Figure 1 (cartoon, helix red, strand yellow):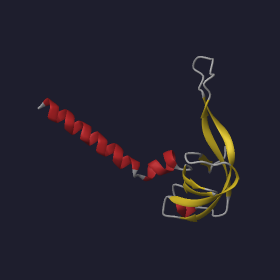
Figure 2 (tube, rainbow, N blue to C red; figure 1 turned 180 degrees about the horizontal axis):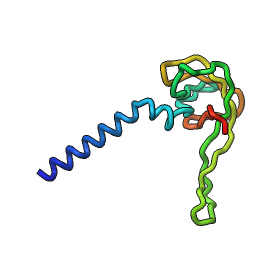
Figure 3 (tube, rainbow, N blue to C red; figure 1 turned 90 degrees about the vertical axis):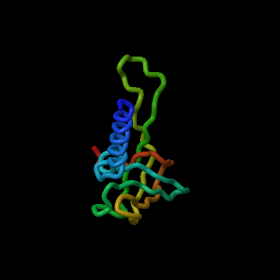
Figure 4 (cartoon, rainbow, N blue to C red; figure 1 turned 45 degrees about the horizontal axis):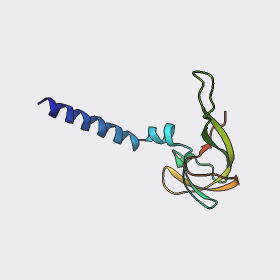
Length: 117
């Protein structure tokens, strides 16, 4: 009986987490801006909500990089590195849009900064 309860708990939590991956919150706060694919200068970018997409607008792109030479305890070894600019194109579906590299070398998993700080 104890093993069945554990199994049901694991299945329930797994379904909850998998369901969260398909939610709008996942696209808005976790995946928004991520470069999904890159073929030459053509990209597919997660834009969270294509209804507010500003086609032909140019955005900066950053890459998360890690420095192994972190010396100070508690200091993060991660930083953002500017890698280029992209121009958003037409939408693919409700969450993704095409983009074209304007400058730099943009790769999958790079982050398009829609809301500059």
